[in-house]
Amino acid sequence: MAQHLEGDWLELATAGGSTIRVLKSAHPRARRLRLTVTPKGARVTYPSGTHPAQVSAFLRSHADWLEQKLDELNLIVRPLPPLRVGYATEFPLRGETVLLDWAEGPYPRIEPFDGGLTLVIPRPHTRALPVARGLLASHLEAQVRRDVSRWLAGYVPQLGLAPTALKIRPMKSLWGSLDTRDRINLDLALALAPPAALRYVLVHELCHLKVRSHAPRFWAQVEALFPDWREQRDWLRVNGAMLKAELDRLVADVAD
Image (cartoon, rainbow, N blue to C red; front, side, top):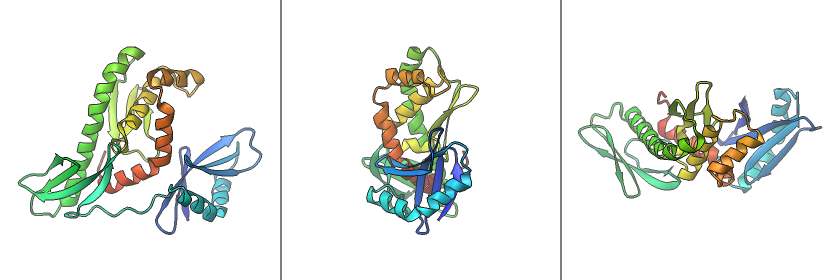
């Protein structure tokens, strides 16, 4: 079982090809390392100052137990079938399972239909897969921008503040961020999630325009703009690894 530390998460790649994401949390009053598994996912808590190597070793020693518990809760991300030209597949889009199909045509494009998308790729098919990935990335970004533009029109007057720019791209571990120039970054994988989950992440980053930390007044601002934020945060905790894996197989290697 391999692992690497990134941000607030520890990602474990199992021998079977599955991925486990463990939330890591230093606690000033913790006296020992502690591993917990709930429907929200796995969390390892440890005393402040613990060396990352100790955390990794602790998880390796509990790897079998961790995998078993997550498997019981259906939280293990199973290897996904690769995207193959000409082979229809299912994937999540805006929280619904849809069909991705293929067709030939004079120029590359995406044609939505009731229940899915058709990737139209011209012959010859020498670069069909990278072209298809680029089309999908552009289509997913357009979906996110459409929703965000509509919501910003309502939230900006309430906040009295607005982001200076919006960038949508695949993000390794985060769902969103706000940089020092007030530019919002959103994970492209949110196009696959229910719109309410995307809306929560947007509101989260917008509220950082007023409060840069996660102090109580920050969460009070989130609550005022989006009362259902807890439900959507929990949904992302449970389903987030799956969404990021799905996005990776759809648009892997597409430059952001």
